[in-house]
Image 1 (cartoon, helix red, strand yellow):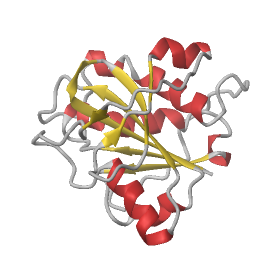
Image 2: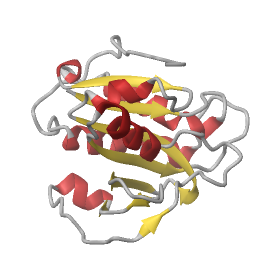
Image 3: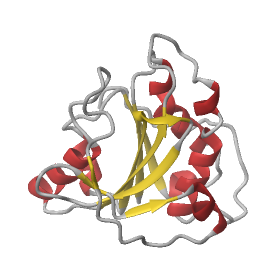
Image 4: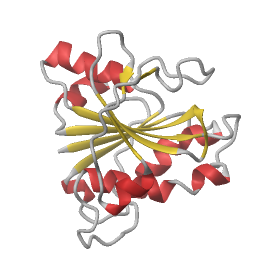
Length: 197
């Protein structure tokens, strides 16, 4: 089963992008048969065991380093120095029109929020690395991230970030194989929320 982890501070405006995407995902009929949806304030060591059991994991978060509303979907692979190895970078059009292609771009990028005052101590890469070290299994991981505009106190997404929620959901559904499968939307009623896992 896949795992989708939306993380961020729900009281910091665009930082709640991950949670909003996860809530929107639960509106798709049958999603619970393919993915466990988890909402967390931040990534913690307790998530490592769950991640180690997943077929694949998609982390969803906002970034202070991208232009507001800029959406990226990046495959993560383990590196020795703890940076993210960008082995797959798809434009939104490529991802949605079915021309998903591996791009041999080995450009290393730091954690998008490493220097942000709202950065998380545990990063997606840390969770994946610890999964391999502690449980002997590192599932393939992806980071779905959008550039945020506002990270100050507030409970609403800024307009450019809010406009990408549906696109992010489509990217995730495509990755886990549900996009285009005639799944109908349903009320978001089965969300597994783990505010502090």
